Image 1 (tube, rainbow, N blue to C red):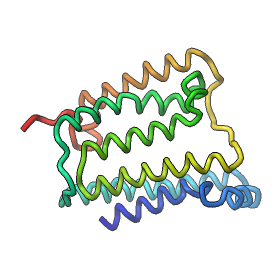
Image 2 (cartoon, rainbow, N blue to C red):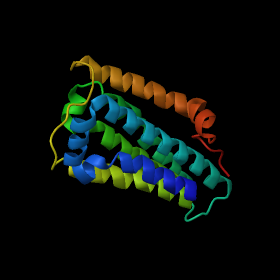
Image 3 (cartoon, rainbow, N blue to C red):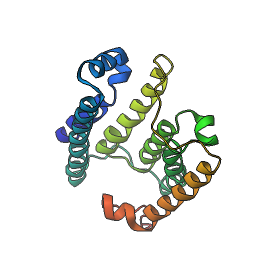
Image 4 (cartoon, one colour):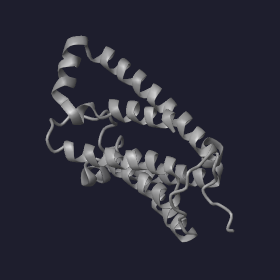
Length: 193
């Protein structure tokens, strides 16, 4: 569990710099330059991500159960997740979805975290998905108080929503069909007991 916690602190910590002090971030970029900042940021985030993945894998080998979700709650979570990939893609494919939601990546993160908390009841799940849920909420609130920064994306187009939804649903179906089992080691649709 220690590896998971360290990974979450590192990964979400580096992603929380602008929440804590966007002005410090801007001063660092001005001092060392954007390319060096981005390289360091990416390196720290990657180390954190690797630790999260490794720590979560280790924690799953000896799970500490906090609650046992009923099967209908797992089904509800599976349905909720259909929105995650379209919203994730809409963050980088500006169209009506991005205009309406303002921060579709944060909405996708919240849905992803809530769905996984509904479907999984171990301590590692609560730590992992609960941390991401709290981070996404804190980030959303902090965006009201800091300068707007442009998000790298393609040019705005009404077709971007079609692409985001079509491609997002396709990725979701791939995860249902076995990609989740291949990457994470757990099938989305579990056998009924």
